[in-house]
View 1: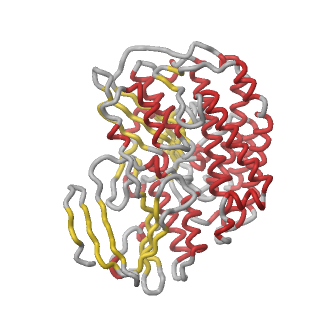
View 2 (view 1 turned 90 degrees about the vertical axis):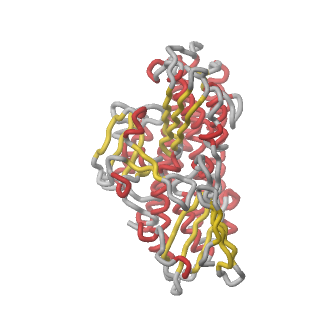
View 3 (view 1 turned 120 degrees about the vertical axis):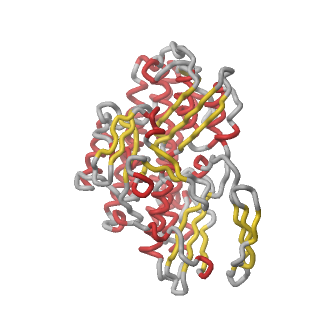
Length: 500
């Protein structure tokens, strides 16, 4: 692997190149490279520079506010946080997932499929497709969704309409497309009407057809650039995600499965309420984002990937026919083994879009989706854990409350946090393989951003750390030399660096 590029031996003697901000991702992050006199890369890091603090400021709030508050973590995947929090507070009122009223369970799943569909469509068509259609080092003025709509109007417009349909599913259930309401403790707050069901059914066959075309587009693009696309930013990793009891792909509720890069199963059908026995988080001084790892494999080897690539790799099958046929083709591309290509995230993502579209149609034809028995109650508990598969991967929400129903502790592990080590490894692979020893230009540096975008990171979601912020400020002169440097340590003390 590329751990040797995490920290250079003598950083003060190296030239610094920064990509700040990383563009076409959710949130704010930057990449720094340290180069020697021959432009050889000696250090490469993805930094997350936002600070959010959600785990801290929801403490002291009543638990029933959580699904509304925590979705403000993000404007792209708020439904994922609403549903993970909803599943957690179900337990606070004594309701396990299998005790939720069937109509409430199906309404939440419908909402979740709409969320995953719109988020995947946004990422692929708006953010990633310019690189894939025009080339990683193409003219910068072309690398945006306007360029796609101009040169590939058929692909671009269908992508926009796919996202719009997913947003309509959310609006119908939650009242608005972003930051609406739906999940409450023990169920849902509103039933789906017959008119709303019929409205969503009007376009679903077209949405399925466009989703199937999207799978064909990414498969063609990927396979037209072999072996480059299979090797670019590619790393071998472990994979974590939820699966159904029968091993099927599961986005809303299931057990944890972990497989090694060779396909060996490390954990299977683990109750996610035991996640603390499986996953720990490491903190490093140069990033606000934590580094989770699997206890069973240790800090060195226990990092893992989550998201579409992990889910399609880990599941035994998909329970919708068109998506299952696409999964079989995808696995055949890897010779039946685990697919490690980082750019294959996009291919797996479009398979999930197709699965979501098929599942939405299935649910809309289920009579129970119109049911009005939407809330259940049990005996109060003081701890709740909700886990779902968000668009970017497995999302953990864990809360404790006191006797007055006030939140006393919160822990969130979001998908992008789980992919932190993997994203850094992919950045280092690209830096070492394609950039080292070359004169760096903007098109060349875009290769690093392409590697990061494949993960569809949500950096806003991922930086909710608590505690005091370490901070380093550098003053760089016109020649690129560090003229001054101040360091604020985690205990709040300030220090002027001697090497400035």
